Image (cartoon, rainbow, N blue to C red):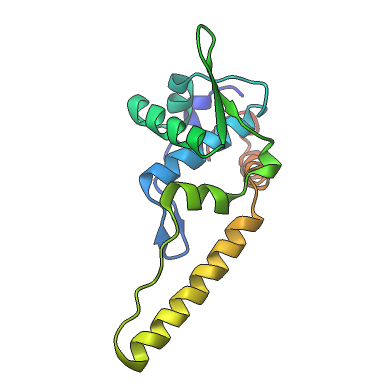
Length: 161
């Protein structure tokens, strides 16, 4: 890739349906996509390089990477030439796992009366459907879609979405 710093240039935040992903989750997905785009397992990337490629403040990226490591998504290597890599192949990491780890599972609160109960039921069903879709999408799927979109825009070797 010619300029990894352009991966997220102008990308802004992203949403999942009507639910905005929190900034930490967004940065975590960015870091995972960068690692997957650069070959995944076997290619160590320093936190500073991941921060630059993903447009994430350096200290914040270090926190995100520590969290991803605790969740089993990345591994770290200490010392000179150390850094981070995917803990498992991109096809074995689902976006549902990442979201659940980074943000936890939220339960809809039931309101009072029949309307509140039915609204709560509807929200639980919508949440289950969203989780189902996210658990079917792997990091590899997302990475391939990002690559296809970049190629369609004539940026096959640049990280700019």
